Amino acid sequence: MLIKDVVKVIEDAIPPHYQEDYDNTGLQIGSMMRPCTGVLLCVDVTPEIIVEAAQKGCNLIVSHHPLIFNPIKNLITTGRVDFSVYKAIKNDIAIYSCHTSADNVPGAGVSWKMAEMLGMSNISTLEQRGDDGAGSGVTGDLPEEMSHRELVEKVKSTFGSPVARCSAYTPERRKISRLALCGGAGGFLIPRAIECGAQAFIASDCKHNHFLDYAKSIFLIDIGHFESEECTKQIFYQIIREKIPNFALYYSELEKNPIIYL
Image: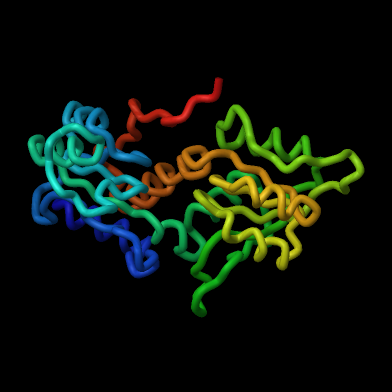
């Protein structure tokens, strides 16, 4: 089996044309025509994860975030990106990244996976683009009404976030049944979530002004960028395992959230 065969399996499920114009989804480093010895899955590529891939006998890393996003001016091994590129080339490891295509793909993307993990129903794309349901974020119904505190605790436990940044709220607010969410940075979708009748919105990287400006319109829950997108590894695993059942496929054991909460 060649690397191109593994990439085809991924791209059949998550076509690259769903990526945003600014993005760099696709093969970052390596040759499609090399035999694939195994795949290591991660959110972000680091030099340590490249070493881990080599130790596990994997010559393909599949990541969510592109390693190469901005132009590289040199390879002097002082920064994460340039050192990772250097290590990947030196160890003959290919890197494929599946970024906003995995965010936007209809019915199977990051936000859809998050909704599934929360047990939501009646799910639909929050901001649709085109006629096939592709787009950003999702909205849907919780399995049961929850208080604000109950929802926050459920979200934290589901996505492994020790804390969550939330809108200030009072006990007088009614319980939540309708929810919107977006994996990764989703503040731009808050107005759309309000339009769709969502009572709460889950995302990451929300700004101070988001909490301030929408305080009376919707309950915001910011769980952190890594926490909201760690499920991409499960998405990639399921896609590859379904089509290639007997294959060396691993989650990175070294990858940790680059942010800690003190």
